[in-house]
Amino acid sequence: MREGLFSVSSGNAAIPTWLGDIAVGWFFTAKGENDKFARQVRNSAGIAVLDGEVADKAHWVVVVRAYERFALQATAPSIRNAFMNQPVEVPAVRSPFAAALGLAGQRPDLGVRFGRGPTLPRSLRGPVESVMV
Image 1: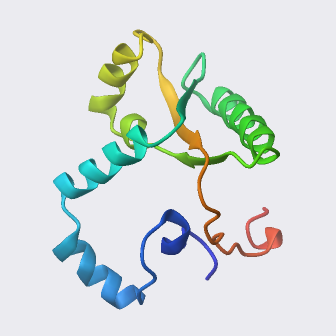
Image 2: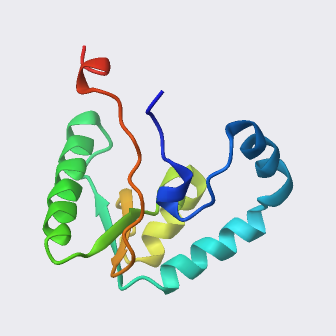
Image 3: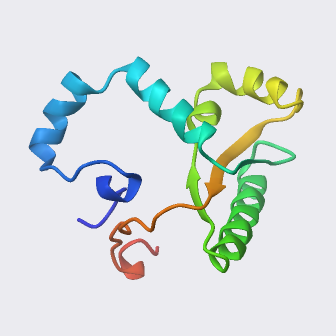
C-alpha cells in the first residue's frame, strides 16, 4: 500500500510489520520516546511553529501552504526538516506549549524542527489518482 511513513525515513530500523507491532509494545515507552524527542529538539538548528488565526479548514490550509513554502526554500541549501507534532496534537499540551513559546491565546497548528543532517530514504507514495476524489 504506499501510504504512511517508512520507518527508515525517520531514522528507525526497517523491520517487518508483524515484528513492529510486537516491538512497539515491548521496546517503545513514553519515557524513551520523550527522551528521543528531547534529543532531536536539542540537536536541531531551529524550531518553527506555525499557527492559524482560527481553527478551521481554511486557516489550516494557510498553515500548510506556509509550511510548504518553508520546506521548499529550505531544500535548496540542503536544510532538512521534520515534523514535531507531539506538542500540538494533544489538546491538553497545546495551550501550555503555546504559552511557553510566548504565544498565549494562540493555537499552534504545526511544529517543525530544521537543520543540517543526513539524507534519509524517502517514504513511498501511491499515485495521485488513488487519493483524488
